[in-house]
Length: 223
Image (tube, rainbow, N blue to C red; front, side):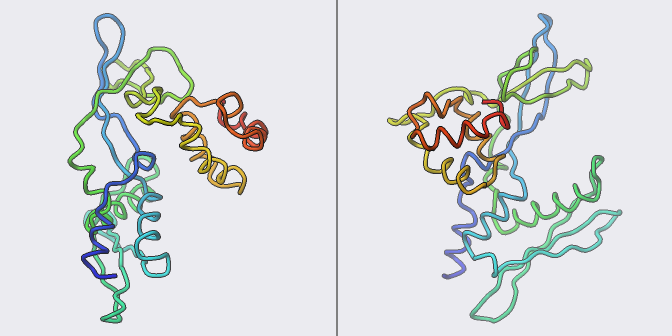
């Protein structure tokens, strides 16, 4: 695979289920409800998955070093078989307020990934208005408004709606979720998929075998 091909595949937009969201701005309205704008970002798992998929797990590596001002820098290297050498790109971040060392390592790796083009498209994603609620709802995210100090809940707009497809979510996602549950896979991802579409695996037309597997573990993710 040429470097042009590698670059194109690394820069490809991340799938929707690998994009995370966080609160950027929020406020309390006069009627007691909240407004909230959210920002898209990626986590380190999305970076690792993209590198594994494009160049192979054995053909990339990361390393860390002390950065200026007590921060940390990360280098992500990809093996160049033609030149028989590692090609590395670096970037850095300050340590964060929460879990400072872990946060600094994570942020520096994500920034180094952007140097390779991974997730770069997220910088062009504008702030998005979130759906908000003053009462707790299953699958919604908790937040605290900084100015008022009041708590509220939010979700990505349209997350509770059916996706635009000729097939119901159960059909579109059945094989993926079945593989994850049946192989004792990533239950966090299973939870996200099921909550995203509010899909009941047992009454929603999924296979009885999948329904049985889901039934056995559904308490883990509030189905």
